[in-house]
Image 1: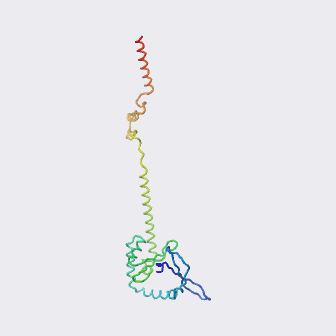
Image 2: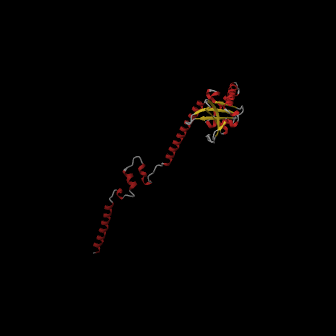
Image 3: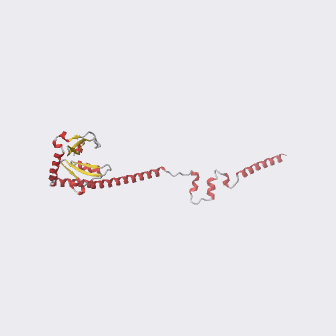
Length: 232
């Protein structure tokens, strides 16, 4: 309950004049739930804030809560939220809308070791295990851990699919110039090859380019000789 007001309490043990002494100290917390002050002795806030007085009150409340009809109503409300919530955040939000705060206690490894439900309407505070085995810390730890693993796997699969799709879209097939379209035919023939390259390579037309040029020169020379003989 104190955590809602950024306060926490710790029990301290020691000896005074050879006699064991127990007490409470209080700390202010920051927004991250970390201690942000020096300890304050319970005696600074009056006798009712001391360990002995609080333990008497806890014992009386425990007996009273055994027969409290609020227990069944609260248990049912929490179980409904468990079946309809999609994750831890949604679970807490649903209960908060009904005047119920959820305090989740985790250790340094992130494992949940305590669940506390604060019902502001009935002004009662319940541990999950006190409401039923199905509302214990272990149940919530397994539930939310499985959800977290499933969500991570789903996110990884989605990321992999998006990456694969992006790569497929960016790698385009490099097409050959239209000059080589004849190569796409299933069974190219020699005639097709010649037709395709004949415009660029004179040799592909069936004649040697140099021989053709030599023959043309000889024809011209022969014509000049013929004209010279007729002139004489």
